[in-house]
Picture 1: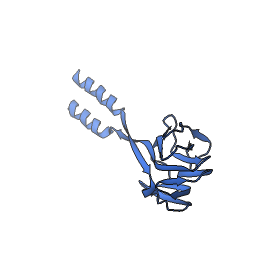
Picture 2 (picture 1 turned 60 degrees about the vertical axis):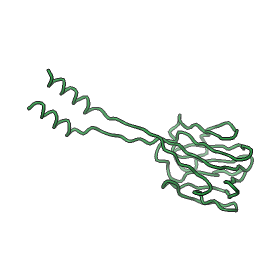
Picture 3 (picture 1 turned 120 degrees about the vertical axis):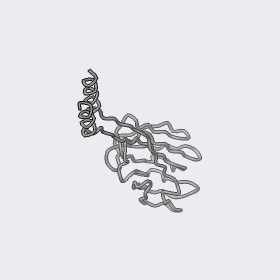
Picture 4 (picture 1 turned 90 degrees about the horizontal axis):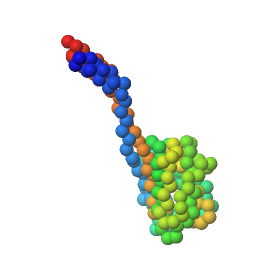
Length: 171
């Protein structure tokens, strides 16, 4: 009886795959974006991911020029699904449009957030690995952009280990 219960347990465990997920963050700010004192377009790396900006300049913070499409975007895919993007503005909060997608510089799937102080864009119901920010009406003064994403690690139970245990019990 014990051997057959152990055999059944081995088969159940053999067929089981476990996954654990955790959250990661990437923060973009004046220091790591390389933004300078006059409006420019550039790319930069944060956490081994390439990002780009269009018409940014450094004030005491990041100043994103008004009416700019792709004001900030990721060139490389985020290594997990984006769950949330938080944009902290200084001064008066201005309208920002954020788009998500599965390729660089998306412009069709808008993710919305209230325009007030810190803007939190909820991406949790999507499977996006790219984003693009647009400043539709006014210049925006940004302290930081924080991208939160889920990363997962998959652990599979190996057949050899269970076969060895099974043979040992049967012996």
